[in-house]
Length: 239
Image 1: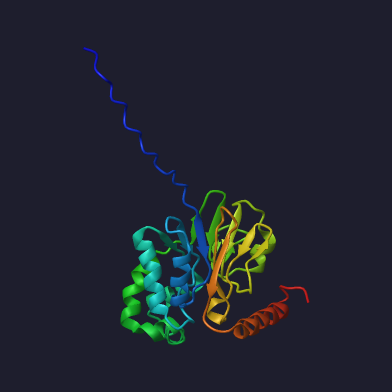
Image 2: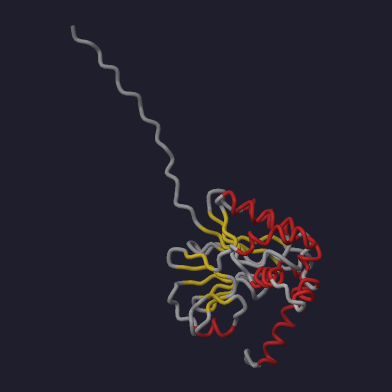
């Protein structure tokens, strides 16, 4: 007896999932609500890299820290060390009397108090300084052009000397009204805490997503003018 062969069930096609991209987020500086809105706008399967200075200056520093650490704990995000995190860690670790004015002048220390800052110390100490992507890197400010080690406060010396050895380097630290590209250096701090935008930049595609930061644009314009005047006095910018 010849049986009837039942045709095999048609296999359902699984959707092809693209490789995750990265979004490097500029200086948050305590703008927790802006960070929440920006994270909500980014693709949920992509990785997020906060390029430092999550703390200080803004109205909800603890909220920004908690959201940043939640991203780290979930595996979705990386929080890089900025100069503000480094200064707070150093002041908390120091028993010298000279650290007291630095702590008293820290917005994070004033908002959180000594006990909560101390509880965050171990987390802040372990923040990495560089995230290495495929053909690009993210760090807070740049690299020392002599040692090529990460430097958390550098500006012009790195911008002028960088030769592209790490591919594009995405940095925050220096606020501006938009994302700027100087050769292989991409500056993404758009001054959220001064009334500008909080920006995320995708190194793989060059895409940019931004949300409004803390206040109106006037404060950012004033801050940029002050920064330019300081750079002119130091001789680091042409007049």
